[in-house]
Length: 74
Image: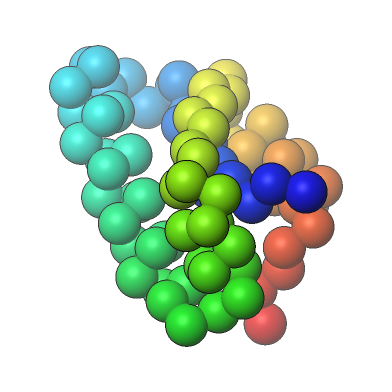
């Protein structure tokens, strides 16, 4: 199974495209830095660092996706 970095952007925050891109880039860097040294990070590097960006309508949809995630923070 390929490891991917998935970013989920809320559409209800009223940010322009440039601001969304900047915030997504900040989140991607922060996630990668937080994962350094883990097996998931190594797999992600070997898979070519694939990224997926999803848009959701609002916070409820974001939380629903987070609840379905296989990854849970301790």
